[in-house]
Every structure is written in structure tokens, then in C-alpha cells.
Length: 311
Image (cartoon, rainbow, N blue to C red; front, side, top):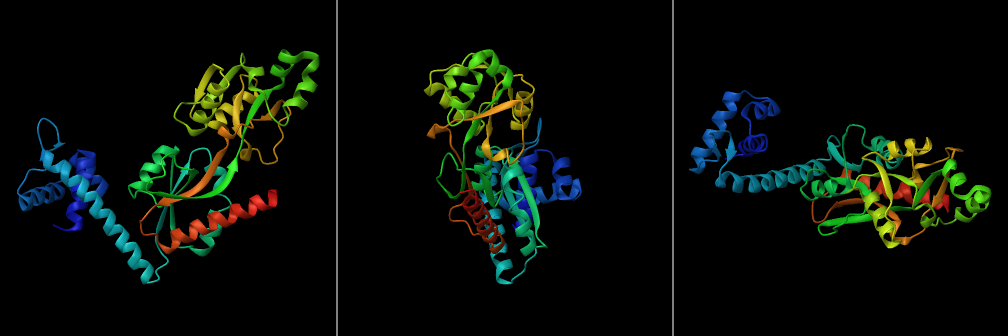
């Protein structure tokens, strides 16, 4: 048994289709089938049931877990050897949340690329929970996202704390407060009273998203059952619709930059429960290549400087 055998086996076990696995591995179906049969003969067990469709046997399921761990350790070993050889060519796999990538990456990646011009950067986008899982399983090297819900096995370094803003179209302000609109606008400029908008239509992210969880907890704490007329996976979609007056939404302050949107008001939600902490995270106890360590240092330095400038 060698690493190639295990890679072939894992590909077939994950695809459960010889044709797709062969295409993934860039080898012929016959060659792949022969390798699997050879591995089964070597181990003396059947790894797959072939009828009515390809599926893992109990032995195959057991081997899959071990094979993934072995291949992961092998990958870590090669990374360490590459560092010892001072080879600056390689791949860094970066996980980044759907919503925050456009804000976090532009100030980090150019600096990293200047130091490691021959490195290929693979971006994996997803929600925080998905990225945490991939980080723990060695599928990505580092994550730029919210601090993990479950910190076990993960180290995190805080980059910045962002607050959420209630995005309210001027038409809602006029409908709710009439002649008192300007006064209420000034009153809410430092901290919004969410109860004032409890009967308005809301545009929110789908459940499971970290921002949605924060907002739901905030509503529950204030004993409000919001009238959610639309849910979306995309923060920018909700924001664009809020700009058109379809409903009220919640938007991260760090996304605004210097843009001007005169048709809406941005009222800060000052509850501690809604503060979103962004961090750079990596798996605890895993070997980090020199390039990954450098990426982490750059991320921390860039955002440390940005926060100081803001202050």
C-alpha cells in the first residue's frame, strides 16, 4: 500500500462513481478499477459493494477515515520539508466568509503576494460553520471570518470588531414619525430603539448565517417578532432592496466605507450581543508552513494598523 493507493481509494469513496473518480484523478477507469482491486486483495477485504450501486462496505468506511488522516499527515510532512528546502513555490488555501471577503482580502492578499509571488492562492468561500469544519479537517490552512462558535481545536487572533447598522429607508421614517422625523433621526443616530420599527417589513439573511443569529437573538431579547418578508443568503441583495424601500435590513458598518446613500438612514445597534468579531483562525496543533504564518502576520498587522488609524 502506498499514498497513491490511498488517494485513489479516497477519490472513489467520495465520488462513489468510478467514472467521476477517474476524471478527478486524470487516469483511466480501467487503471483505477485495477488499483482498487489490487488494494482489496492486499488488505484481504472488500472495500466496496458493487451492486446495485457502488457503496462502501464497513471495512471501506473504516479505511476512509484512516486514509484521510494519513494523507493529511503526509501533506503536512511535505509542507514542512518544503520549508526546510526553502522552496517558496506552493499553495495556500484560505477560507473566507461570503460577506467579509471583499472587505478583508484587498488589504491582505497584495502584501502576501509581494512576498510570495510564486504561491497559488486558493480561496474557499462559505459560512463560518462550514469553514470551521474544513479548517479542523485540514482542507484549508487559515480562515478569515467570525470567531468560531466552537473554539476547540482552533486558535484565533482578533482582527477587528464590527457593529451592525439598521438600514431604514426615509419613507419608513416619514410614515412612522411624520413631523418628528428629524428629531427621531437625531435620537437614533447614536443608538437605535428597535421597538420603534417592530411593525415594519424586514429583509434578513437566511437562518444559520452568523449575522442572522445575532439579529434573531437581539429581537428575542427585545421581545420582538419581526415581520420578515424576505430572506436571502446575500447581504448585498438585502441591502440593495433596502435602498429601494422594500424593507428594513441590517448591514455591517465596515461595508460602508465612504459611500453615500441619502435615501436611507443608518442607525447603530449598540447591544453588546450584536457586535461581530472578525478573526484570522488556524487549526491548533497543526504544522503551519512559513507562508501560512506569514499570511497570518500580515492579516494581523494590516488590521491592527487600520484600527489604529480609525481611532
